[in-house]
Length: 482
Ligand code: GAP
Image (cartoon, rainbow, N blue to C red):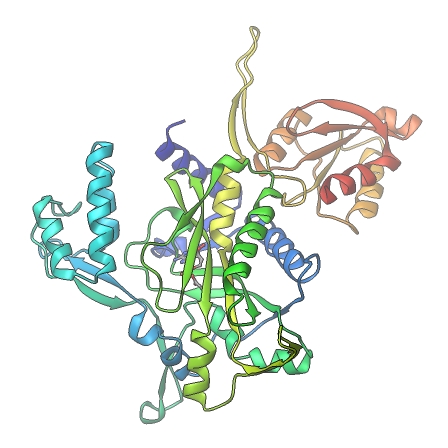
């Protein structure tokens, strides 16, 4: 399936089967804001929980999790550099009044060029962006006669910077009101709590603090479904290390995060590393883990060596010491003493992970035989992440079969998410479960009443086998824990 078609098919499927809906759709929706439906919310929760457990429970490093507030003291964003630096170069088309992020505008145009020309254009763009050369970027757009998709003209304004943070006000009356920001990253909630966690948890360096939560960015060009949203969720971890060791920990986390991705059942060649050309204002090394989305290879996760930038600035702005006392001895037998730790960050978008999992899982299969036309859409989620693990399906609504099915439900739902359905033919019910990605379906039929066996049907192979009903829970549990 062509890539653009695949993304459209996933968007349609996500809506039809309760994964993702456009936000406030009855009022015609809101750009780049989405709601997760009943199965999308389960999938998202499974990914979030898995990431959390992998970081804070299964990890060989000492990592704890926190849950900081979205609202933070406004000085936080001054100290972090977001007030001054969290902006993108934008350009407006004077005829359509449409605003574009300059890199997206040029990238979109580059996609229409032959490969060699496209690469040369993007290399030129990277150079100009790295040099903050806005006049040069405008000239590049004009020389290439890049047009606005709406007006079709090349009547452009100058290139200007726009801050991406959303602001709001606290305080009941205007005179007392204080401008605050919706956090554009969860990381700062970790930095401002560094000392609280270190002291209350008696944490010894190296250690990590993890957090999952909402972040908000006023993305100007928001496209690609849940790839680029204005309200999204991040899963971030800041790992605090001794200054001078950051390079080795950066390499360590690159490798570890890729190991995590390999546990999602996605082939290695669907990922690649991409080193940053232009480093963010806080980093001394940075790369992305990119995934081959239907729109091509794009950033999924960032791994950043953030130096002591954040803690040092919070120390300066808050006038509170952000130091750690390291009693360990160096090679000369002297304690390392007081220092501001360096930080390696791993930051992955939960929504982008969901888009990756949906893209990878989505498959349209032609099952036609000589006798009849047939097809199905199947979502091949690994059992650990699938929204529903087991569907319990009595063959008919009578003869005591629903009651037997219910006893199996009662037993299994204590351990994992199950779904009970007695309406429609078994074939139709199987297809609906395939479309949601349920790895196991169990049918209770008349033979069950005689010998306590059921038919278990495997989603991917569509094979069926007869197993004792008492075995079902173990079969599913084993698959979830694989
Ligand atoms: N604390 C570092 C940080 O926020 P980032 O590269 O700007 O770094 C990290 O964002 C991750 O957050 C990205 O790799 C991406 O997965 C996700 N992300 C960023 N902006 C997003 C958006 N507008 N919509 C969805 N996910 C986004």
